[in-house]
Image (tube, rainbow over all chains, first blue to last red; front, side, top):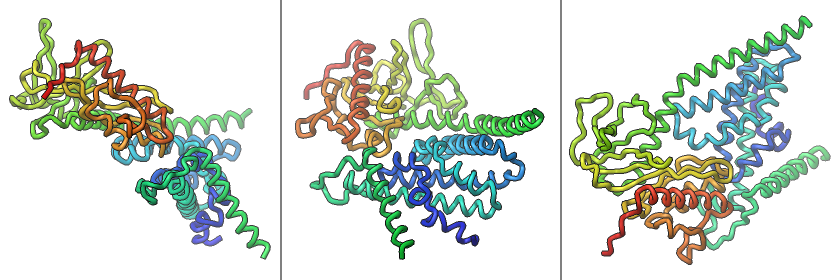
Length: 199
Length: 236
């Protein structure tokens, strides 16, 4: 795979949410508005990028049998440091993203990429993989966020879309709406892929 | 056996490095985080009590006893049953507070901490009160700073801390939910339909909305008790 492909594969071909079905827990939880989706995406991309770089750097010194606990320690440490530094020096940003940071710890995309990619590949490729996967994750979250916010709240970025008379389908910003929307999106992309492989 | 020991030691090394890194970062960031929290509280206080003359200095004493910040301006002194306030810019004790400056100080009474605003140096003439209302909401404690005038009418409020469901419960911090609370006494805080003159709960976040309302009502009741009743509202 070429260097450019390592970067772009996360956008669609190996999109973590729609193609690999990774990190569904935070996806379901925070995709109820565009703003939340972007916030979570940005925070996760940052952590993914940094954890990929660090794990790629230490990959030769890590014994195979205990790589998972080591990855977890590295990721958890990193998330905590990001959280503390953000709270101390960027309080406004922390106020906006603060609720997403603890959720990143349970985001299996980070551990998934550490295990599947960064632990075996060079620094540059791991960096591009982390960035591409992060952007792919953000795109997926925003796609869900736009759909759910417009249908469920009648708003886009907190601004009313249809005017006052529109009665939003509240279900869509509630948890069941997350499952419905994600299911439809997954089905749609599977349908495209099946059609493509048949022809 | 030898292998287990080797792997254990490597893991120990990694966790020790991680632990050390965390404690270093914690030590560096802690004072900043505490300062930010105090600053947020001070900003909230001056915001909810914004009907006071904001051109005058507003001084706020943190309820922690640590005096390490340069913008602490007044300290209470207890002397033979009488509480009075000595005002200066910490740590510069030579710059005294001017007469007419507005000072906000915390008061602890019956396990409630509330804030009292007065015109320096006349401590007897209270301008307004503020307190932190808190109660456990849908996911965690919701903290709200509430400012009231001496008759018990809410003059300002803002949510300080909440970890409610993003996109639903988080909307209790929006002004569209909070503004209808203004100019009400605790007896008038009832959630219901807007058309009937009640405060409308955030759609899909009834528990979070009710928590905010309840915490304000309970805090106000307690404050009324501690003050021995609010002043009668003047009929004009």
